[in-house]
Length: 260
Image (cartoon, rainbow, N blue to C red):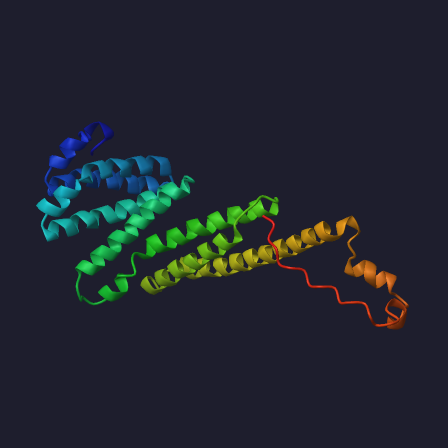
């Protein structure tokens, strides 16, 4: 089995033929898979990193020296490495790096589906890879949840960006369900997404109410009338007492001004 000590310099790895690269990378991938099953994500990530070193090739090598079949085989082996390393980075809390790996997995899956021409199911597979879509959506949902918790501690957050992110999550999960209709985790994630969208919408409404209240205080000062104080003041009075001539102008509506 290969170990870190067996990894050649990058320039040496570039010079290896593709079949030898795959032969060296496979034990690293298998070691990483075993670590993932044991939830040892840091060890798994290191193993996948080793596999990537063996699989490395420069752009010129890929485009000029590899045949079409070799390019396909190379990317077939890179795809699960990106998927699994993205999972490890997600579990280790490195969301930004995890999203990069999952984006790469998506790109490779779409490319491989395009190489299949018109084989049965290739049109659907051009949506990408269900695991990449699912994991990407999950990570983005977790980031929105973290932002929502900050909002509840009165820390600034961008609710517009949160809603846009959740729309992207819905697209990813919908496509993942099309690709893997029997995966029970995907509809569960869609249900969680619906609840999260409702929470963000409610936080958005609360922020708007707070903004209007702040604007009222800035306009009227601390003595700004409230609905409760007006109702108490006018209790037992008819309209003729509060406005005997009926000439008081209506209070203009507050403008919608965002103050952050």
